[in-house]
Length: 464
Image (cartoon, rainbow, N blue to C red):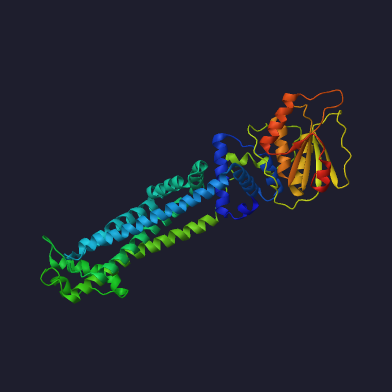
């Protein structure tokens, strides 16, 4: 787990923490005894401990893998939208210029290339200034595609958590702005590239037509639109060229065609590509600067309730937490720290079982765990110094209750290898077959080996 967690970015750590909070808010508290203990031993402030706790729970419950699947789906969804943007831009250029068999009405072509883009750009700017959430439709489409492509049921919890996290600093507007303007930039670049390709391989003539407007209107509009491109080096048709383009018998002049082509390319570049480029860069800058300042809201109930458990002012004794409803499988060698030595421990033995047994010199006795204090002390110690081999002695005359099995699981997760020793009944007594069968079933579900004989040779040498 440690390797996977260290590869997470700060945003992903906060995201998973928020996801775990939402999950507990809707479904109730998780089985977090071991997660809390590990978070406490990791030190750091409350935010750091909350993140460490959430990351351990996310790894255990599959949320970390679900996030990786969601991110893969998000990248694939972004690729799909990018392909659609490229195809749409190329389609706009082809629709504006046609196949070259008929003259191109320059202002119709300009409207086809820039009209929708400029309308949506102005709409986005107005929404950003007055509402702050414009572009949500495209954002919802991307989130929906991401969830569908992730194909992980647990990934459904991730998108709401991410949105809530970003909304606290209003980063969603800049994230969506980067997405919207980036896709439109891609579409306009595609349109510009297709225009150049079509103009390089086909012969186009350009005209303008009107019924109620005079030629001076088109002259003024052409010169006004071409002023900024002309300042950057693009040519603008002369007044004479503009006027003769109204005559279908004269529009096919070579110089006139080239002048209109350069003007059209310059206008699309200046009013179509560059505004989207600048806005995408602005949104990306605001997104990155805001992302680096993201923090958890520690005043939320889900976090404030954990403060005493993760940063206790004093240890509470004598109160046992409710046993978990479902035990999680033990992963052998789960500890990421270097393991060494051998340890034997017993759980809730009575006076009929003498303890400790005669042990080899290399095996340490951790005593009998019969109180919350003794359990907590041993778990804290094993978190810092995990043993290579651990033997857990249990009295199979007792029922394998969920609390004992949860403790066995926690102990086993802190050692490289673990075996359970099911003690024999004291002289004159017999073990209940059904209860012994319950122990066998429970330990098999945990994935732990068990035996009725003391694994002392294994503890000393590592083999039977």
